Length: 120
Image (cartoon, rainbow, N blue to C red; front, side, top):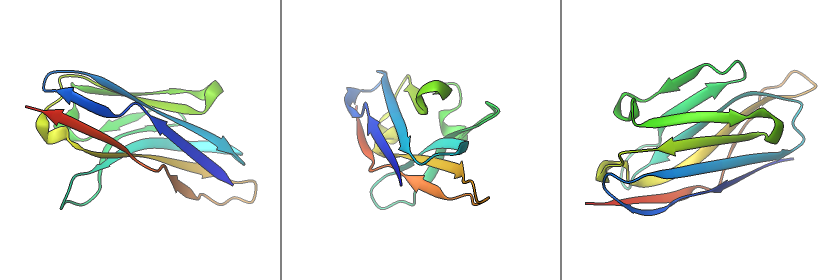
């Protein structure tokens, strides 16, 4: 079994910063990729940022230049540094983990979500 524990959400004023963390543990043979998604009320869940095992990154256009995703491979942890936050960044942020199993499978797991609220 795989567990994801997220932390770092909260309330911040527009222009402020937050750092999200997501630590993975359990039966992980190899991590393929980790990412952050978000879901605002009444909207679909969307990709925010994604980082592969080879450290290739991908960002939503709306966060490019403001958010930075990074990984600590030794700790199986992914971070999302969010700067210059805007009210439209308000959402529940979810960590996603894609792993490779010993049997060749590539299951995906989700964290429980952490609320980020940006006030104007």
